Each structure stands twice: as structure tokens, then as C-alpha cells.
Length: 434
Image 1 (cartoon, rainbow, N blue to C red):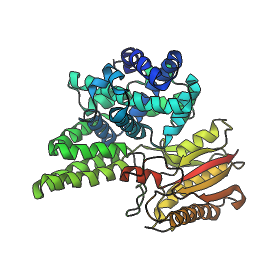
Image 2 (image 1 turned 180 degrees about the vertical axis):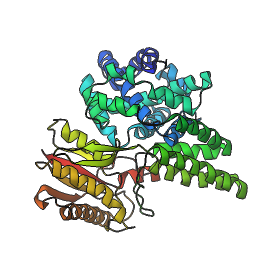
Image 3 (image 1 turned 135 degrees about the vertical axis):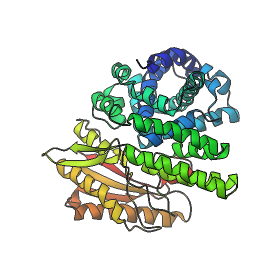
């Protein structure tokens, strides 16, 4: 039987984190403990989703076992919360790891933890940024002491379903993109096969053998799995499930080995970084069949943009202003011209909007802060308008859709790094009326 990681991690970390974090956050010990108790199963559910493909498991294993994760954090955060660069570094690492676990759903998960515990949103956000590095530290110690590999990590996380069940609240599962806890738990058992898990272990071992610098770039790719919209390249390629995830992981290994024999190690690291970025974009979750009201069925990426939107609309939650970030939308470089590949997601979105005919939405475009602010705002507005136009041509009434460009306003990540800038270049769909 698979070990109950939730119970073990909660017994090991809750008291330590609650004592250290409550003082730092200015929240009561009871509130902080409640938030941590809700956060641990949410994080483990997110990790189980991440490891449901071969490439995802390999990337997660490499991130956990990397030198950047300090296993000493599993013993408490007291020495890290005194302020200054050490505290800032921990919070920055936590933010990056958090984004790697939850991607575009980070804000929704934070809101769910805040609602469950009664903790302020700002405190809940900081707490998650502290808790995730501690959980990764605990997992690093667990993997190291047990001499476990990526395949064992994947199977252990996939086997947490029965232990997760009593700890999952509807608000958390909705934030993760599933209508019910049962739907989330079902997804954990329908992902990676044993063959893919074994391949994940081999991919992780080979990636480490290429060199320490190359392994660190794979870790960076894991943190970027929430998706990127790069001006120089098209936006993420369609995700195809575990088989494509396996091919993507193999591509990382083959490109790394090819470059290793032909170029210096520094160039090998660069090659692996580029290949890993492609793997992160292509190797996410499986394709699932989604039943919509009216008997319509569509294929969507499990846990992706359309799946998350449909789950929210079906949940009975009448909260307006809920936003969802497109994850398979592409534009020609530096323009507002949609590529043909974007039709897959736009067709699926149109089907959802037709199934929920009372829903009105706003399409919001954003950029990073590189270049002229006025031009960025115009580009973001033009891209939002292009999405609206495409939806209208697919049968959605223009009166149901508004569009707006915000340019470099409302960043969701730091513009000081390429990873952060890529997250800020995005298009969101905001549910305005149900």
C-alpha cells in the first residue's frame, strides 16, 4: 500500500510552519494552522497532476532533488524569516515553485485557502509561498533517504487519492479546475501508465548525467509549465497526453546527448534548456472528452483553460469576475493575427459558450513591460479584439463579448526575468454574467 504522504507531511510540518509563519504573517496560530492544513493536500493534489505524465514526473523529480531546494526547510522556517535577502530569496523561490505547481490557477487556489481558513488573501498568498518550499524540502529528504526515483515519486503521488479524499474541499477542487473532489481524484488514476512512469525515471537519470548546469535548466523549465506566450515563437503547442509527454521527455534526452558529443558543456546546457521549454509546453495533461449541456461533446486538455472554464460554469458558482487564461492561443509574431492552430481552442470555447447561452464574457489582453507602453496597450487591445472577432465568426453573439487591452498593467509575475515576462504576455477570458 502506498504511504499516506498527507498525514506524514502534516504531522511533520504543520506545527513547525504554523509557529514560524503566524508570527511572520501577523495571523493567529489557529488561523495559520487551518490554512496550512488546507494547503498541504492542495499542493499534493497539484503535484499529483503534474506527475501524471512521464515528462512531468521527470521534471518534478529534478526540481525536488535540485540543489536549489534546501532540505533543511523541512525542519522549520525560523531562520529564514528574519528579513533581508534570505527571506526575499525564500519568498521568490516559493513564488516560482507555486506557479510551477498551480500555473494559472495559483490565484484561485490562494483564494480557496483564504476562504477555508479565514486568513487574509495577502497572508494566504505569502503562506503558500512559504509552505511549498517546505513541502518540496520534505519530499527531497523523503526521496533521498529512500533512494527513490521519478517513477516511484509518480506512483506514490498517483496513489494518494484515497488519502486526499477526506481533505479536499469543493472550493479547492474548483480552484484546481475540477467540478467535484471525485472528478479530481478520478483524474489522478487516469494519467500515466507504468511504462510512462518508468520512462520518467530514465529521463530524469539521463538529464542529470548530462551535467549539473543542464539539469538546472530543466528545473527552470518545470517552473515555467504554466505556459508562455513568446513574441519570437508561437505560443504553446497543443498538449497530447502521456504518449506525447513521453516523446517530449525523450526529445529532451536525445537533444542533450547529441549536443553533448558535438559541443562544449555550456552549449549542451543551452540546448537542453530550449528542448526542455518545448517539452514543458507540449507535455502537460491528457486529452479528455467533455460533456456539455445539450448533449454536445468536445475534446479538451484535462485541467486546461476550456476544461477549467466549463467546470466553473457547471459548478453553480455565480461569482462574476472569475478569469481564465488561454493556454493554446497563438498570434503571428508581433501582431494580432491569430494562427490557424488557435482554432482548436477557440472552437472548444465557442462550444462551451453556446452550451451556456446566458454567459457574457470579457476578453482581456496583456503584455510585458518591454518596449513602448502605448504600443503594448494597442497590441494587447488588438489581440483581445481578434479573439472576440473569431468567436463571433463561430456563432457567438457580439453582444455577449466585450474586449479590452491593458498592455503592461496588472502583471502576474516579475518583468525582471524572461520567465516572468512570458507569463505576463497573456490573454484572459473573464466571466462577467451568468
